[in-house]
Length: 118
Image (tube, helix red, strand yellow):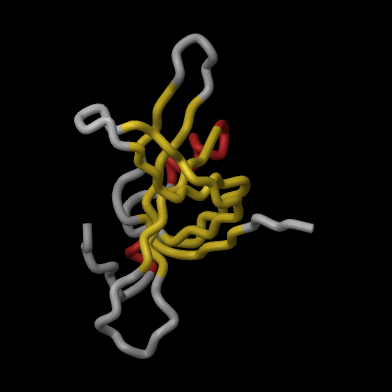
């Protein structure tokens, strides 16, 4: 048996970017999510995750999830690979392919503003 399920709750780190695919009418929304570490040290920086949210859920993310908004996501871990055009080197990065999105709140809903690490 294998299992690839990721649950994350955090704050949107930069404004979401939506990309529409001509002809198909499909879209993908790219979101960067900051998730606090489980540490008592307030100086620990958060973990940063790249999210890909497709279709209608991606449209909702682009319209309502702004920088600083708290969101919850459920999805699966994927590894994107590509060849760097400048160097010809194979590159990769982990990405969370989001299946469901919960809009939990905005930055102004909390007194604590998210630090800007990016």
